[in-house]
Amino acid sequence: MTGGVADIMRMLWRRLRATPRLDYGQKLHLLATLPLIVAAAAIAMLVAHESRALSEREIAALEAQLIAAKKDELKNYISLARTAFGFIYGNALPDDEEAKTEVAQILAAMIYGQDGYFFVYDYDGNNLVAPRQTWLINRNWAGLGDANGTPVVDELIRIARQGGGYHSYVWKKPSTGQEAQMVSYVVGLQDWRWAVGTGVFLDDVLGPVAAARSETEAQIRRTFGWIAAIAFGAVLLVFASGMIITVRERRLADVKLKRLTQRIVDTQEEERGRVARELHDSISQMLVGVRYALELARRRLALGDERAGESLSAGIEHLNGAIGEVRRISRDLRPGVLDDLGLGPALQTLMEEFGHRTGMETEFETVVFRNRLDQEAKIALYRIAQEALTNVEKHSGATRVSLMVRGHKAGAMMRLEDNGCGLAHSRGDDGAEGGLGLRNMAERIEQLDGTLRILSSRSGTVIEAQIPLSHMLPPAGPVAKTKDSA
Image 1 (tube, rainbow, N blue to C red):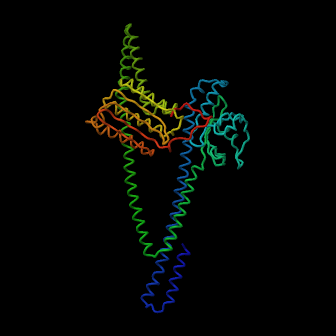
Image 2 (image 1 turned 90 degrees about the vertical axis):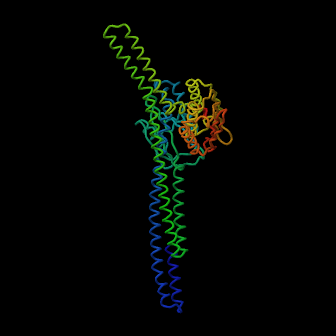
Image 3 (image 1 turned 135 degrees about the horizontal axis):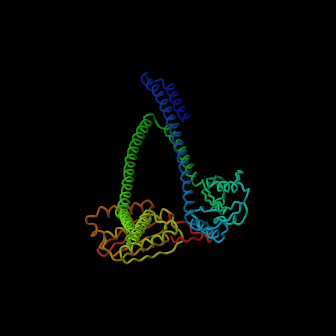
C-alpha cells in the first residue's frame, strides 16, 4: 500500500511540474489532493492494521474454542465408553479375564469418524486395544516417544494412574499414515491396571484456522490493491458503503441473535413445563399415595391392627409406580438405549412402548447398516419419530402405526405411516400444537441438510425423513464390529 500511494504522489507531482499551463487554482487543487491521499493512505493502513489485529484475536479465540470443544468431545466419548462397559467392570474381580476380554471387545467396536477409536494400555506398557492400528496390539510400548521426543505411552499411563487427563503428542493418522498433532484423553481402571483413552487429531481443527488466517491476509492484500488503484473519491465511497453495510449487517445479526435467544428460552420453558406437568400429574400423586399409605400403616401399627401390612403393601406398590414414572420421564428426556445399542433398538423399544401404552397395532422394520449414522443423525431421527408418534396418539385417531428405517445410496431414510384421519382433519383446537411439532421436526432435518416430506389424507399420514450421505460414516473394517444396528 505504501508503494502504491508513493507512486500516485510522484505521478501527481510530475504532472504538477510538467504542466505550466495550469493556473494557480488548478495547481492549488492538485496540491490539496496530496494530503487527502496521504490521509486516505494513513486511514487505510490503520484500518488494515486494526483489521489484522482483530482477525488474529478472533482466529485465536476460534482456535481455542475449537480445541476446547474437541477436548469436551473426547471426555464425552470416554463417558459413553464407560457407560457401555461400566456394568461389566463394576461386577468383575481384578483377575476376571473373561470380563477383561468382553470389555476389550466392546472398546474395539467403538470406532467413530474417520480416525477415531479407543485404545487400552496396561500399566506395564502393553497395548490391548487399537482397532485402527492393530499392529500395536499385544506389544509392549513402554518408553515410546513421538518424533519430537515427547513421551507417549509412559505419560498416558502416568495420567491414568492419577485418575485421568489430557496429553498432546505427535501420532500417525490411521487414514493417511501421516504424522499429525494429537490430543488424547485417558482415564484409569485402577482395579485392572488399565489406561483407557481416545484422541483427536488437531490438523482437522487447525486446518480451518489456517484457512481463515490465509483468507484474512489475502483479503487485506486485495484491499491494499484496490485502495492503491482507485481515486480518493472512490475510496471514500467504498469506505462509506462498507460502514453502512457493516452497521446494517450487525443490526440484522443482533435481531437474529435476539430471536434465536428467545426461541431457545421458549423451548427451555416449554420443556420445563412439560417435565413439571409430568412430575405433578404422576409422580407427585403417587408419592402422596405412598405418604397416606405409610401414615395409615403407622396408625394401624400403633393400634395393633392386623391390616397394617396391607397399608405397607399399598405404599410399596405406589412407590414402585413412582419409580417407574421416574424411569419413563428420564427415558423420554434421553433414552439410554440410543447411546448403548443404537438407533434401531431405540426405535424398536419406542414403538413397543407406544403400542403397549396406546393399544395401537405397531410394526417396525429396519435394515441393519452397522453403525453408519453419526450421532447427530441418530438423535434427530429418534426425536422426529418421538414427535410423530406423539402427534399420532393425540390427534390422528389411528389404530395402526408402522415405522421403517433403512440406508440407501443417497443416505438414510425413516418412514412413519398411520391409518388416522390425516393432518387437515385432526388439528381442530390443537392446530397450534401440531404445527409446533411439525416445525420442530422440519428444523431438526434442516440442521442436517436433509428433507422432510409429509403426505396426509383422510386415510392416513406418511412422514418421511431423508438424511444425506454426509451423515453416513464410512463402513467399519472387519476389526470394528459393533452391536449397533443404525
